[in-house]
Image 1 (cartoon, helix red, strand yellow):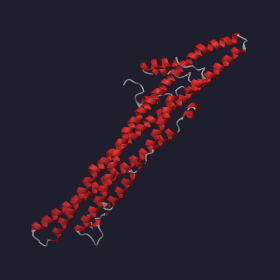
Image 2 (spheres, one colour; image 1 turned 60 degrees about the horizontal axis):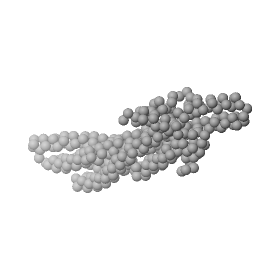
Image 3 (cartoon, helix red, strand yellow; image 1 turned 180 degrees about the vertical axis):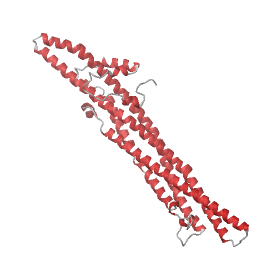
Image 4 (tube, helix red, strand yellow; image 1 turned 30 degrees about the horizontal axis):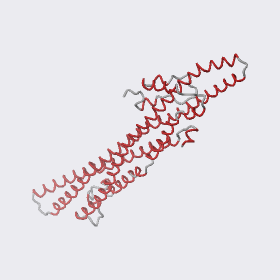
Length: 354
């Protein structure tokens, strides 16, 4: 698209709302050609002498924006989006039950999985199976959260496009109003002022006061529309930020449940198997060279596997913590959107119609 305001950066370049607009460039000059024509046509229909019409001017876009802010607020406040950290914390606690960092070489890696009085391979396997079931259950919950995140991303895309439409609509109203304002200031007002200066007729003086009051009210209406547009400008980058963190969350969850957890389970299973083999080798009483060689090879393989399990375990816990941090960042972004959505300015007429 050739629309100058099709991206967030361009939206952020819009001037702040002001009642001192003579020093700033006309908005219509920066609009696409088709919107310039629309603004000119809309300006021709504006009657600033009609107080009710001025109050109504642009309220359709403001009311639509108000409904949009309610929808946006509902989206960022959804309760089911806030349980990912709780599930990840449960997963961390479960994995910490067999945390390799608490082990020492003296007692051996796998013996620390169980109390000193219960170190048989069968008991090790029983504990591993119990923990594995818990990990699988939490993985299912994370998968559901990932699916919900992907659905939310689609909705956020729709919300961003709606926000963009309201931004464009408000721009059109503001640009047309600025055109009408200049037309009144430089065409109608000088003529009325001249008539008031050249005439002693009180009606001519009153006509000038009425026009000046109408201009002031019209400028206030433009300011109200600019304040409404400011909400769309503030919302756009926040929606994109929530989308970004949602994608990062979905990626981290997928990495955990499809890569890190399966690798962790494989390493633990291998460590248990090698531990059993090592015990069998230690029970052998042969003193021939072959037995000694097997024992040394088994010990080395067990040591290597222990290192692999430690590394895998640490990486998995790190991934989980990173995911928790990302969700916290997402929650902060949603809180900023919530503040924007709840502080939306409306004109008096728009408020009466809600």
